[in-house]
Amino acid sequence: MPIRICHITTVHPRYDVRIFHKECRSLATDYEVHLIVADGKGDEVANGIHIHDIGKPSGRRERMSRFSKLAYQKAMEIDAALYHFHDSELLSTGRRLARRGKLVVYDSHEDLPRQILTKPWIPKPLRGIVSAVTEKVENHFVRKMTAVIAATPHIQDRFRKVTKKPVGCVCNYPILDEITACGDWNAKTRAVCYVGGIFVERGIREMVQAVEKSGVELKLAGKFSPESLQGEMKHKNGWERVDYRGFIGRQEINRLLAESMAGLLLLHPLPSYVDSLPIKLFEYMAAGIPVICSDFPLWRDIVEKNHCGLCVNPFDTEATAEAIRKLVENVDVAKELGANGRKAAVEKYSWNSQADALKSFYKTLFEK
Image 1: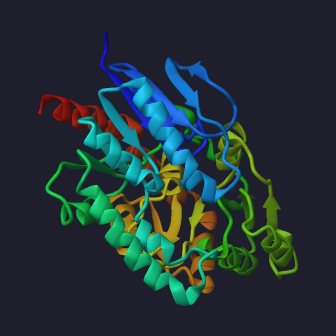
Image 2 (image 1 turned 180 degrees about the vertical axis):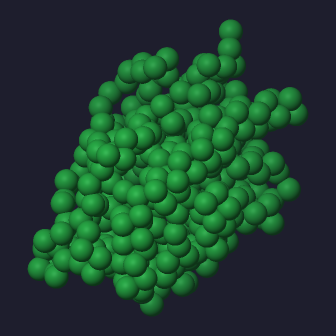
């Protein structure tokens, strides 16, 4: 019988890309995988993964209190050899499981203390205090875990300073089979694209201003947050150059990428962004289109090392417009950068490599 393992989340949807499609499905080839979720959609077995639903909380407060207890009860009922949880809200649950002699892994998707500095539901004067307290609490609980898995090298480095326990890194690179490489440049239009959550901090205002100045179309897909931001943008100069597709699925995303000559990623230099590895960067590369991204040192290193795009000051819309024009008006240059990006995605930035890293990390834990 294969070793039984259990992933736990009360925050993410059951088919979360990182948790279900990447980690659980990859591990299911070697382990009996169970997944605890809290969405009220019932139990099921999907792709060989046993999904256990503990119901749907009425809000954040109930999720953090009663549903943490329900997750612990269900976890003990499953009786796995290793528990792998994905929410900071479940740190105390992880500690309880560790006290029962279980192997417990905390999967840190984001640099939580830095992310809190941009949370709109926390009053700005309190964010620094909340961030500092959160970091102390998270560090305290991490020391009680068997191991930590970090989604970026930056998060890995941070936790290595906190605990002597194993700290692995499993980056959130794309599953290449889901992304169509856009090799036919004759099918493309004079357009750039952005796919993802649409926030002020992710550069929507700057993107619209840049396409107005460049005279190029912006193919835009995703959800506005807050919803009122969409109404604001519709009244901005440049919106007439935006082809807004709304929230679309993977097939539609592939078509949008195939129509575009470059992908935009103009995130603002916030603490939670500058050391991040946004999956959209690697999805653009995997699709074979050049990237135009914020000139954060980490991103610049990836883009320049692989010769796959251009880096700009995200607030300098003239520079962004110039970068857009350079690629749209020089198809051979854009095509070469896009091909370089695809090659790098296949060789270095795909989920296959990270699946191997995850399995290797698990193996070291079971061998201890």
